[in-house]
Image 1 (cartoon, rainbow, N blue to C red):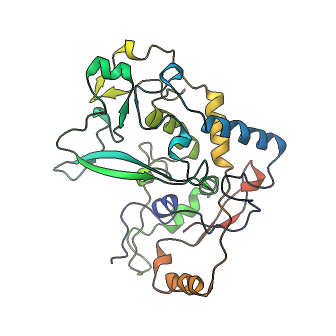
Image 2 (cartoon, rainbow, N blue to C red):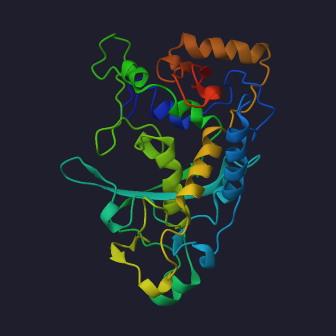
Length: 304
């Protein structure tokens, strides 16, 4: 198998979709718990955010008209809220003759929602967002988000230092950062395009639940065509900036699950993982930088 990576440094793609099951010990009591060491105010924000994360939306409270899940925890629920899930998201794109992979943003992409509200179904006669016939489709399962606050806290300089697009060190790995449309280094989401955890969390309200938020006030489109206004007459935004901030605080301070003890076979596997070069892409550890949340500051963690 080629060791060449195309779309992200070990500090972007591989790390941000991998995940922190073997993270260093932070005193976490188990999956779904916050980091130890939070202040009372930080813990209060975590609890408020968890309540919103677990909330189920309905059309009367902003769900849809296009959506994938009725709430954050409807997809991130195994083994607890914040975990992975069995839900499969549908993405689509078109490869243009010039080599550009078009995410079909102008036609509803790159996420094509699997469900619609009854009002939209009645108005347009559809039961899911239509995907252009010429598009290539891909399915993506729900990842867990434990420890994502650590990944967000890694300095951009550390990510850039891992990039080696011309394979200058001769190890056969040519890592590249992915950049957002404005040039910022991407970290989260499909192909690590989204630069920050705050943007990632806010975007999920809009793209997965069809709920409008301060930075996404439009209900979206169906195949690039505006959704009839009578389908969802609620005022925008349907979720306030304060609710978004609390949800971000919850996701940011959701600790990685406590690591499992490695038996002899697992320890040998860990050693072999490094000896055959896997760790060249899936970097075993990273270190966060300074942070306003002390529990996230200057921490070394196992990212893989």
